[in-house]
Image (cartoon, rainbow over all chains, first blue to last red):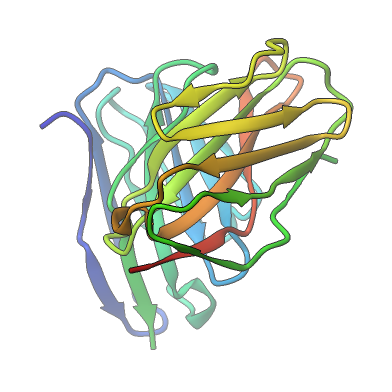
Length: 112
Length: 117
C-alpha cells in the first residue's frame, strides 16, 4: 500500500547513543517533515524538506539532523540521545501546500 | 504569531449521538487552510477534513462536518451518528505561511474523544 513507512516502531536508547529514524514515502511527495509528539503539547515540527537536497529547521531542531538525498527518503538522525528526546516521532509527507499531510505510524523512542 | 487552541482536553459522546470539538486559532492572514486530524490508538494520524479560508461553505466529509467562523477564528468539528471507531485523539491544524514561499503547519494540543456504547 502506498504511504509513509517509518522504522523502527519502538526504540530504547541509552543517553549519548546515536541512531537514525528511517522514513520513506512512495507517493512522489515533494514535502516531507518530522514531528515529535509529547503529552499536552501537540505536534512540534523538528525539520522539514521541500524537495530532494533541500532541508530546513522547524521549531525544535536542536539535537537532530536530517538529509534528503532522494525524493523518497527523509531520515532523522539523533546525534547524542538525551532523556528530553523521549517522545513519539512522526514522519509526514504531502503533495503540495494545499493538501494535508499523510503521516507514518510513528516511532516511540525512549532514552534512558 | 499564529496559534491553535483546543480547549477541550477530553470529550465523551454516546454512540449514535452528535458531538462537536472546538478549535480556535489566531492569525493575521486572510488566506489559509485548516485541518482536522484523527489519531486512533494505533497512532496513525489520519486526515479527516480540511477547510479553505476563502471558501464560505463549510466542508463536509460523510459524518464529519466543520463549522468555520472566519471572523471569530473558530473551526469546530461536528461528528454525527458517532461510532465506536470514532474514539481517538483529534488534532486541529493551521497552515501557516512562512513568508519565504513555504508553509508550516501548527497543531493544537488535541482533544481525546471517548465514545460510549
